[in-house]
Image (tube, rainbow, N blue to C red):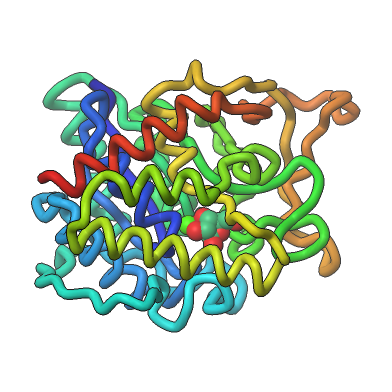
Length: 317
Ligand code: BDR
Ligand code: CA
């Protein structure tokens, strides 16, 4: 059993990452923190609570994290996720509890530390959003680093970005935070866009999900994915959208599903043109220690099975 903390900004793809993290038999989900990203942190927090409530994960605590990146103005993404951050044609009908009334960074620290003291287990941090909360955690409580197995994240790109020619959204939102995390000495496992753009929600995958049930939950899931599909079509002209975030969860559940390369990766923070670029030193020009396990491929059929299984479990809870 792996102990995990999920830091996210739901977000359509984050919603499915929550379901996968909450329903995997190999994971114990210790809690969820939210951050500004796809929408304001107020909205991403409500969304995390809604997703937990609807998928049988109401016992998982949600704590509201950073409202702004460390040094830059915040940036949200309604063009993909809509005004609520989880738009679809279906109205959310679910009662949610409140977020935990605690500072997120203090709560993450307390949880990871008490997990270590009580069980001897390290915690894996899964990050599917900007790295602001994780950077604050490592900066304010540096001793936590020895209690963290890895930061496994969805973010960055080896080549082409999705927000600028070179930057991926999660890293672009808070490049300084990403730099702190990538330079922290903690093991980093990164799933970049090159891999997430293989995990497309195709018509066949939508049909597989639809065939699970006719329930409200499955209808909502399908409509969320259809909204996401439409936005990707409008913005990128792609017929099927990449469901990024659950890949980071899959990488913790079953790392052998991924092919990886250990590389030096540095975060560009100074340039305006290239801010948020994850500069992957494939030829090791810098001679600096290699710091990131970069995923280069995924066993897609295995990933799809895992995704659909977690949707099925969320539906049946
Ligand atoms: C990432 O950006 C966010 O909009 C998604 O939720 C995902 O985490 C993809 O670039
Ligand atoms: Ca996300």
